[in-house]
View (cartoon, rainbow, N blue to C red):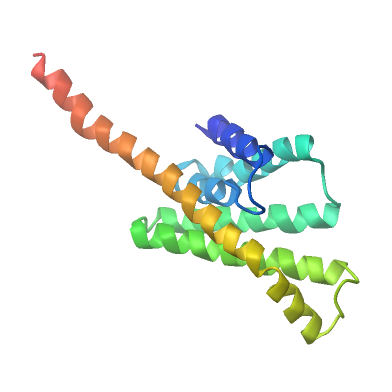
Length: 170
């Protein structure tokens, strides 16, 4: 399943999509909840590296902040794993979106001369990034719904119907 998630995450990131409407945050959260810990944190990074191979790698500073943000979302997934319900999954997705927005936009603000390096500059950076933040939230919630919903539906089917079919043949 880990390889499939890396492939899906990378492919959906490479295909045309609105800016920041991508599955990597949801992949990180899902991996943290359902995969062994060693795969959970590596999963979003692997998807990013594979897709960056085709899209192009940014500066190492950008990769550190973006990849680091996804590692933190994976850690949120590990926390959600112990308390998994609809509220913690949605909350984890939203917190992950906020973390990504705060970290990556602060790094952009800090690394560019586009904004003055003061409170007004950092606020302008965050305000100008709101359209991207909206897409991050929408993408994370959309893909979280797809990944978690599909997984739980399959689990429900296997648990409730596969067993009953084998019992009815006896």
